[in-house]
Image (tube, rainbow, N blue to C red; front, side, top):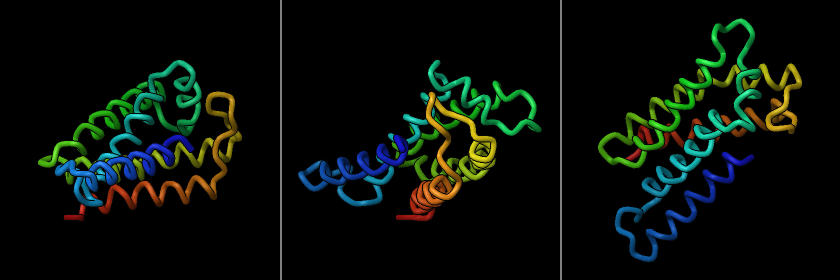
Amino acid sequence: MAPLVALVTGTALARLAGLVGVGALDGWHPALRVGLALMFVVTGVAHFAPAYRSDMIAMVPPALPRPDLLVTLTGVLELVGAVGLLVPATARWAAGGLALLMLAMFPANVSAARRGLTLAGRPATPLGPRTAEQVLFVGAATAIWFGA
């Protein structure tokens, strides 16, 4: 839920800033880049936060090796991607990479939901709502990737 709130709130606040005169945020496309970047800062930091890290490692499908390394790598990629979204020259490539990363990480969310795992003491998001969120997140990244 926090990633969705970050995406929506970040985009809305950035768009409002554009409407009141912040030229760099004047339009939905740059506002969406800010919202998506904020979302990836939230999710990227969670990969390293003690309250979340062990649960994220447990989410990695058992067939994959070195779940701790995978969580670290994906967290770093999310944070680097967030920065890339904020730089106009790299935003499209960052968005494309992040869209592909989200698709690659989705099996961990499926695994967590099917195995009834928790994240920071809360049950993993059920598969239906999590899939809908994932479609929205990948759609936002794709809109930036192919957008103006």
